[in-house]
Length: 384
Image (cartoon, rainbow, N blue to C red; front, side, top):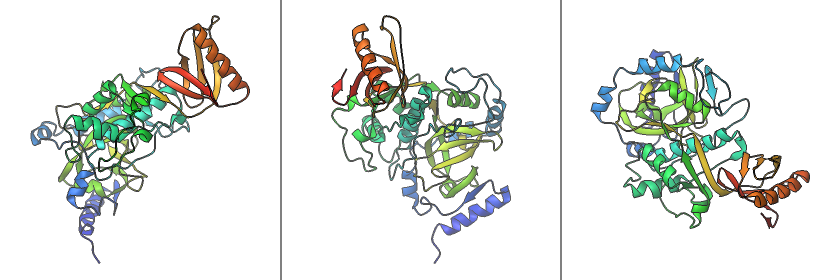
């Protein structure tokens, strides 16, 4: 029995054949949804036609700028090399994966929250050089609380610039303190201010493909908006380019890398792992306004640091460092990297003694991080 979406997919496949099959179309979870439900899987206000018209013809220029970035000197000290490579993927940096697992926004136009927090989670791990950080931030807090206070709803979506501003000003708690429900149910744990992440060093990268690459390579993923065409819901694999002019709405994802040979960005979506390339997709440079969404609002954003205030899972102290008077102590924790020991000489000495004992006995410690400092250390029932 023929299903309503099958003729739609057949038209897309015919168009792809004429284009040389740049990507594969087929039935997906999104294909099965009616139009209204598909729109709820997006989450950025649809662009005005005037803004779209003003950017018509820029795709080739943006693609050329993206390709021209290879070999440029890198600014960030945290970058893995001195110049930009032809390809890069935060999911495989010398065998290390800094990208957190793909999530599913469900029937709620909350993609801006998912895109922003995917960028923050990756940045927190990448700038520390510790893929094992496994930060899991609460999209419910950012969207159902922060965005709702701005008047955004589950149908309106939100601008990522506003949500990133909230992540700087107020911060976002962890998923276990406010589990995500697409219907907006639930509330944050009252202790959420003590389990928090805050963004810092927000950077507007809109319309600058080379700067986008610099940021991804130096600091981590960026949140990016793009125009979704109707055929995108049927994407299975390959480098996406639209085959239709019909626009479904705006969407926000996290850009986690690029590939100049394929002339595309690598993006993390929020439609679950059963869609696309295990929840990810590739999109051609300059396509769908991915580098410059048709709006006066910033549409490609990143941050250079993520400050934490939280107890983190138990982990080993691998290295220690202190000046002669112990006033300046540091610990390298296996899932956190180098972290400064907070407090004066007496507090630092006590922490170093505990960490030295734990390291010698290969005993894990439970750290409480405040900002970029190790504020408290717990071993079993002993806290310093």
